Image 1 (cartoon, rainbow, N blue to C red):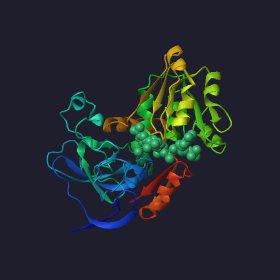
Image 2: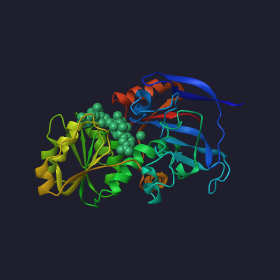
Image 3: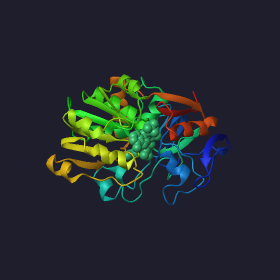
Length: 340
Ligand SMILES: NC(=O)c1ccc[n+]([C@@H]2O[C@H](COP(=O)([O-])OP(=O)(O)OC[C@H]3O[C@@H](n4cnc5c(N)ncnc54)[C@H](OP(=O)(O)O)[C@@H]3O)[C@@H](O)[C@H]2O)c1
Ligand SMILES: [Zn+2]
């Protein structure tokens, strides 16, 4: 049996282990992807640290996968060998619950499969995934750039386009990391007045390069007051995983503004009822998207030039890649480059 190299985690809080496994065969409805690149997302800490119950270890993390279709299971239609594909967080669904029957497969109520958490992901030379999870990668987008668009990209693009904001209106992006640096680009390319909010002055120049019209250093300035000077934000993409930071930003919403909760906060978010009532402002959580949302993200990025800023690591440098992401020093997404 042919072997592949993978990075696995054998138990919650366990180390990354580089091991050999048999190359998996795709079952009915599945395809095998030869992985070219996989982004390292903050949510990979769910697998690494065991933050969800019932993760079946050993598990291969990784849900920002870009590669090519390498083998096709029985009954799969619409995909052929060699197609360039991405796989994100959405890893499959039941097909019969109320949510699936509404077409919201990514919000499946019964069997919500998550790539790299409930099934093996892309820190590997090959992976098997349901064909329904695939997004087609346009020619213009390289594997290293496509990977991060499969989670950081779709989460910010899809939440932005579903938040009700229009061109010319104010969008703030709270937290300029993997998600945030793409959120800034998407908002700017959509013609929104784009405000980047981060801790410290060191990200100001890069945020402006990514398209931000205004930079708020939350260590020195009050983000709510600064946003109110601009008339209040219509949308805040809250990517920073800080409950207090989201609570503060909420006060920066304008009329009918929405705080889109993308980051998983470390503390409860407190909603200021006066802002909520007098501005009809609110808070909405947002969950990634389905494979067609990812494909839309890739197409928008191909059309407009949105690309992640990446630091590339080989598979055996997975610890370094994970550490720069967790300690916030990566600019702005670590990507494992696994094959050409
Ligand atoms: N909703 C979804 O579907 C979805 C999808 C993917 C990821 N996520 C979640 O989204 C969050 C972000 O993921 P990521 O991959 O972008 O992480 P990341 O690359 O680590 O970026 C997070 C950024 O937030 C900043 N930050 C942290 N605490 C902050 C605070 N209190 N105030 C301001 N900025 C703060 C950090 O910057 P500094 O430390 O340098 O200030 C860092 O740049 C994570 O919680 C992840 O699990 C959710
Ligand atoms: Zn992710």
